[in-house]
Length: 69
Image 1 (spheres, rainbow, N blue to C red):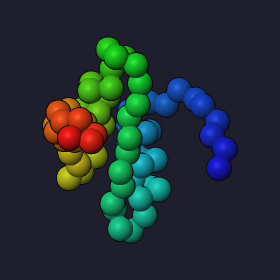
Image 2: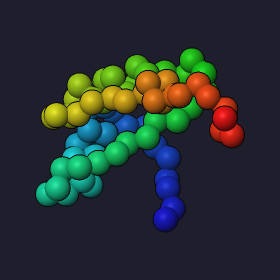
Image 3: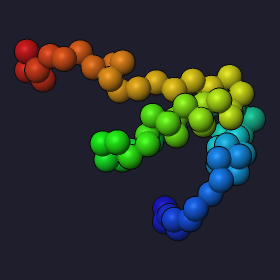
Image 4: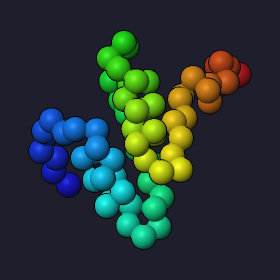
């Protein structure tokens, strides 16, 4: 799969996600970026724009244990 990057408004992005989710209306959207790049802000705004959506942050899942602990 090839991606063509472009600037997209929040409403258009939300609509694209809903369109691609199909009739199941289940989608997982990952937001990646550098520290302080706006990931949390974008995730919160996107979750608010999508019906029945929620933002789950990796910090909420972190166990703070070593991989081999």
